[in-house]
Length: 299
Image 1 (cartoon, rainbow, N blue to C red):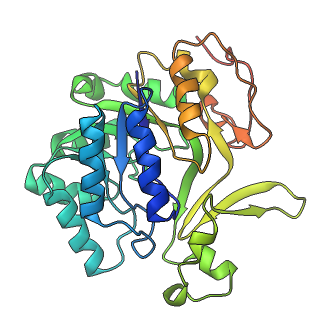
Image 2 (image 1 turned 180 degrees about the vertical axis):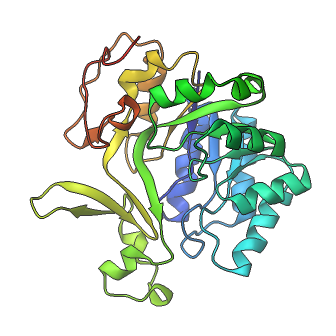
């Protein structure tokens, strides 16, 4: 089972992004790296050329590199950027909307189907494989039981060797996207005059309920889970189902967690999850639930 590092979901200064990926290049615990802005094109201080330069450095360090596309396309300029990304030609693309899937298929470019694509049945999986999909990132709210069920379907059994299964396993889960910018609104700014205020929130902006529980993270137009998803204790039960586990970059200790995941791929160590960590969805429980035991399910 491989460990991947998803695209940075937050707005970090260019210097921090470049330093982060220099550290990633030196890490032996990351196999696959996703690069690119997927939330808001206004706030990235890096352009495609910059990401390609980083991609070459990571490839030279032995990493498999994939370029991630925007999740919500809102303008002709964003479509042109998408076309340039797919036309770059050197690296596999993570398609985060069906427009990207269509363009990749049209140009014969193999792709990863991102978790934002609503793939919930065997027929959609077959359609995506026929379109050129080589890796499928399961929607974040689905469970191990659901994954085992869909992979057991005859339609999927016939094509299972054609694609990898990747599971979002660490980080604040991307739950929804909107044409409105929630971070700008929280500062009483218009979206078109946001002042790039996301730079003030390198790990997003917390939203709490009236009784003080952290329920969401605002990240520009993206809404994330308030609790950090962490499946480190479930890794041993993924074998045979999951090919890649994804860690989402955090402002601190991302590579430390990658090392912990690497060391626990076959289980053996039960980590005590923090107060604001959860693993409910994978265990077919409410999303904010936290189950410490590794023996919750298995049949």
